[in-house]
Length: 114
Image (cartoon, rainbow, N blue to C red):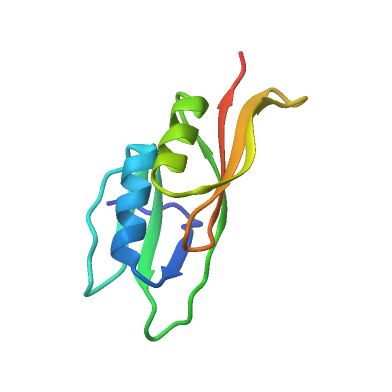
């Protein structure tokens, strides 16, 4: 698996649950690993997910492009995320929403308006 120059890493209590959340909401690929960081792929990007242990919890604020913002927003809410911002068209051209998952990560989910 090829890594990008910058690869986000999230350290979380119940990393296995976070991996399941990301796979469900973003149709991501990858599997939970308890012996090393889990490499989870969303589109062309990798996020490393690690259990708390050697490192304390470290949530993230990530902007994720998807094919359908509204569908991803509904999946996130169905999976227990808190809505921070319902889907809206932005002045800079994205149809975007924002949610916070139960691990404290903030996800801005967007689809470019063309």
